[in-house]
Amino acid sequence: MCDVAEHAGVGKGTLYRHFPTKEALLSEVIRRRFEELCEIASRAEEMKDPFEAVETALRTTLSAIDRDTGLQFEMMRYSDLHWEGIEEQKAALAATAIRILKRAQTAGAVRSDLNSDDIPMILTGIISTMYFRPSAADWNRHLQLVLAGLRPEQRQTDSNPCNTDPKERRMSVTVGFLVLLEAKPDKADELVAFLEQRRELALAEPLTVDWYAFRINQVTYGILDTFEAEAGREAHQAGEISKAFMTAAPELLANDPDVRPVDLIAIK
Image (cartoon, rainbow, N blue to C red; front, side, top):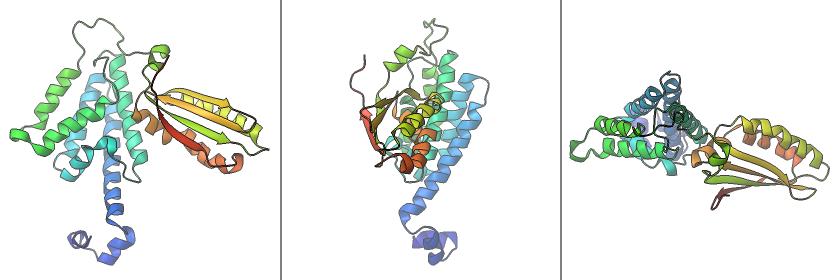
């Protein structure tokens, strides 16, 4: 921290007043970089050509990371990246990337078997080339090869390769949330009404496959959400339903919500 203060030209006391620990400083740096990446993805999403949006999102994201070895190192462990304070930015970036991917699949511009978990795998693979530069490799060449592999196979004839059948989409879910709720004795009816109203918010979440609200007994209720990938679960956790629960919980619930992330084993 002393070296950072000296390099920035500020006093150590000033630095520590804003960032009491090294972790707090690093968290703020990572958060701001993720905000930049979110803006890059949002601009790419506005492009008319679906494949061009995919290519631009990847290329401009990687260009923004080039020469920033610190961010490259963090991005290579994207799935395990849990810096406090960037959850919202990480979820927003994942949600935008998935919308870009789904639009390209619907248009038949990318292969139909591509899924949301492939996006961080693709990025971390190219970033590893950027970071380690094996045999002086060029990450732009790596990206060109990846983009060629994203194109659908020529023998694919389905004009709409994106799987939009609700039943088939349910078969692809892998993760979820099980939330148990205990209503205050005189607030059960209000909790039921609250849950019914949250259905509209769930319908507005493109990455939430299923959302169920159910009753166990007169005071115990629950919610089951399912998602195709971890990105969907993270987006839901940072979304409007979770925010609404945080606001209403003290008035309606006898205890804090019991939120349990689950991995789905078998689906019918």
